[in-house]
Length: 411
Length: 106
Ligand SMILES: Cc1cc2nc3c(=O)[nH]c(=O)nc-3n(C[C@H](O)[C@H](O)[C@H](O)COP(=O)(O)OP(=O)(O)OC[C@H]3O[C@@H](n4cnc5c(N)ncnc54)[C@H](O)[C@@H]3O)c2cc1C
Ligand code: FES
Image 1 (cartoon, rainbow over the protein chains, first blue to last red):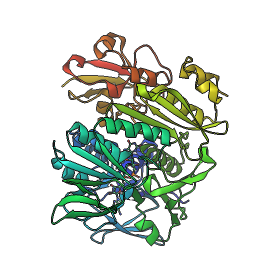
Image 2 (image 1 turned 120 degrees about the vertical axis):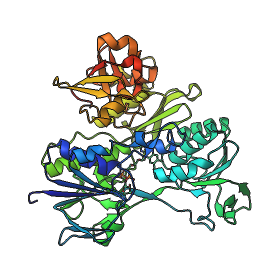
Image 3 (image 1 turned 60 degrees about the vertical axis):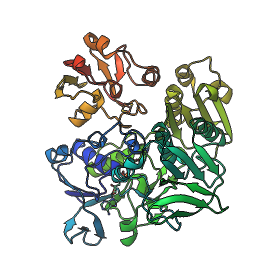
Image 4 (image 1 turned 90 degrees about the vertical axis):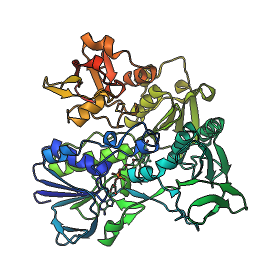
C-alpha cells in the first residue's frame, strides 16, 4: 500500500472509537476522520442493558473517552452525520448533505442493527429495540413499577433487560420461540440455570411461543401468539438479534456474507478498506481460522488494534481468545472461547451455590468456558484456550485444587 | 475535587482531578492516562485495569472483594497492594491517592 496520510473511519462506536485512539497511540500523524450518525462521541453499549437502564450510570460515564479528547488529539469527530456512499475508484466517501472526503485507508466500523419484529403492530408506540442510548432514553420512562413488559427473544440482552425490569418492580414475561433461553449462545445446562434464576426472580417465560402480532391502536396493549394466547403489555422489547450493517460495503461491491468478509488483518476484498467489529467476519485462529462474526467488546477492541497496527506498520497485537460477559441480578457470567461443537461439559462448583463454571470440551481439547461468579475459572480457561493448552477433564473437575495451580500444570 | 496521581511503569507521573463517585479507572481513562486498558469499561470482567496502590494508601482504599481477588490472581506481576482500579470508588478520603501502573495489562 502507498503511504497512508488520510484515514476515514465510518461508525463512531466501540470499534471506530478505539481505532482512532490506537492510531494516535501507535504514532500515526496523518488525518483521522471519525464519522458517526449518532449524536454522541463513541460510547460503550454493554451498560445500556445493565446499569444505564437501571439508572445507575449517566451518558457521560458511558463515553469511551470525553468528547474533548478527540479535538486534543486532532481527530476530526463528525457526529450526527451518516456516510452514504463509498467510491472505491476515486477513494472517496460521501456523507449526508453531499460533502465528499478522500481517504488513503478506510475503516468500516458500522456495527449492527437490531432485527425488526416481522409482525403486524411492530411500529406501535411502546415497542422498542435495544441498541443505542437513544433507545434506552425512550424506553426508560416506561420502566416503572407495576408496568407490564414483554421481552421477545431470550438472548443475553433480553434477559439483562428482564433482570433490570424485575429489580425495578415491573411485571415481566419473556417470549422465546426456542424451547429454552440462550439457545444460540450456551448449553442447555447453563441455559437451564438462567431460566431457573429468572423464574425465581418472578419472570414468566413462554418457551416455544410464536408471537403473531402486536396489539394496540396507537400504543401497544398486548402481544398475541399464534396459539391465540394474549399477553398484556405496556412495553414490548424486541431482542431477536441483530444484522450486520453492511449497506455501504455491499453498495461498493465488497465481499459480504453474514458480515463484511476480511482476512486476519481485517482487510476486506479491497486492500485499502478494513472492516472491524460487529459488521465484519474474520478468520479466528483459535477456531481453525473459521470465519467468525463476533458481537462483543473484545472483538471490537481487537479489530481496532489489528487495523491500527496494519496502518502504522506497528506490531500486531497478541490475539486473545474471544471473551464476553453478562450481568444479571447479582450473577456475573464470563465467557471465553466458542462453545459450538463441544461434546463434553465438565463442571467446577455447583449451580445451587450460584457459583460454578462449565468447561466445554471437543474431545480432549478445551474450547470454551461459561463461568458464573467464578472469575478464576474464567480467566484460567481463557488463558489455556489462548495458549492452545488443555487439562484432562477429570483434572479440571477437581475442585480441591485451585484453578491457578491447575493452569500452571497444563500442557 | 480529590487529586489522584498515576505513575506509569516508566516513572512518568499524571496528576488528575477526579470527581467523587467515579472510579480510579474512569478518572484515568477520562484523562487519557496510558497504561489502563479497561476493556470491559468497569464491569469487573476483564482485569485490564490493574494498579498498585501506594502502600501508604492501601488501608484507605480497602481490600479487594472476592471476585476482584480471584481476577487479580491471574493478572501479571501481582503485588500485595494490587487492585482493579475500576473497583476503587473515589471519595474525599482518597484525596492525594497515589497508584502505580504495571508494565502491561495483558
Ligand atoms: C445492549 C447491549 C449490551 C451489550 N452487552 C455486551 C456485553 O456485556 N459484553 C460484550 O462483550 N458485548 C456486549 N454488547 C456488544 C457490544 O456492545 C458490540 O459488540 C460492540 O458495540 C460492537 O462495536 P462496533 O463498533 O462494531 O458497533 P457499534 O458500537 O454498534 O458502533 C457502530 C456505530 O456505527 C454507526 N454507523 C453505522 N452506519 C453508519 C454510517 N453509514 N454512517 C455513520 N455512522 C454509521 C452506528 O450508528 C453506531 O454508532 C452489547 C451490545 C448491546 C447493544
Ligand atoms: S475495567 Fe475491566 S475489570 Fe476493571
